[in-house]
Length: 139
Image (cartoon, rainbow, N blue to C red):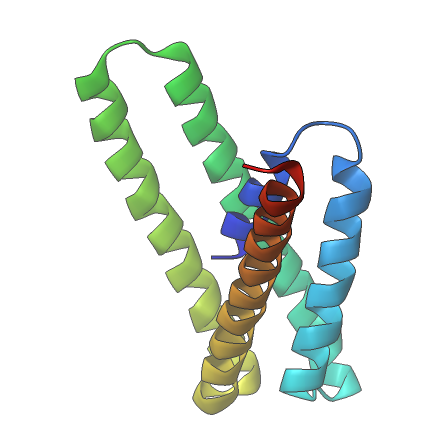
C-alpha cells in the first residue's frame, strides 16, 4: 500500500516529484512515529527495516513498470504482473515477520493499520484536490 500513494504522486509528472515525495515521506514518518510510540532502541532497528521494506517494494514495482513498458504481449504482461504481485506480497510478509520480532504482533498490527490509514488519508486528499481542480476548470 505504501507504494500506491507514491505511484499516484509520481503519475502527476516529473517536476517537483522529489520534493513531493520527500514531503509525503516526512508526513508518513511523523504519522507512524506518533502511532507506534517507538522506544529509542526500537526506532534504531525499526526505521532501517521500514526503509528496506520500502526500497524492496519500490524496486519490485519498478521491475513491473519496465515489463509493462517493454512488452506488447498481453499474456506475458498478465503472467508477469501476477508474479510481481506475488513477489510484493512475499516481500511484505518477510518484513512483517521481522517487524513483529522487533515490536511484537500487536504493535505490528498497529503499524499496518497506521500505514493503511495514512495512505487512505493521502489518497483522499489527492482525490479532493483533483476534484477541486476539475470544479475550478469547469469540467
